[in-house]
Length: 196
Image: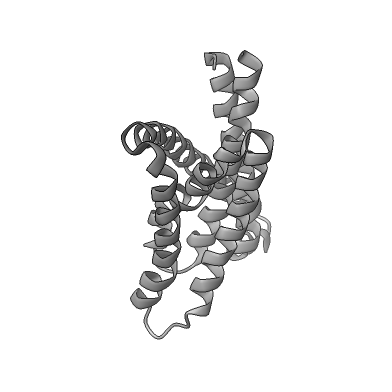
């Protein structure tokens, strides 16, 4: 991959993160907008928009750091574990989903297990779709690494929001983070294919 293609990937991923975070903020944090819209305070509205765009840029950068860390870990895993690496990745996917349900449920006081279960199942469902598309567009061996990236790496990147109080930032972060990860994963083989 050339530096020009990498810059294109970096900038478009920044755009995806910023725009999706802004749109997500309208749904997740509507009170932030209502305060400045009634009555209309234009400078305050601009500040709120810039605040959420800034969050989106940060989420995008976290996603990109995770993606390049994953590429390194995947090559390391292939070198060390060889044919066992897909099995280890599948185990880590299962463990991460278990962690998202069980440990978060245990940490929550007097909460139902259902929100944690639905969250993990939703992440798994969308991750399966992304992994299937990746495998279909490249080869079937790409399915497990793609699923590993979408579930495990996205969850690791999501940890700061999971530790925050309240669920607003949990949802504000996961939607653009997941989208940025999926975008990078599905864009990479397109960029590298053109250079060969």
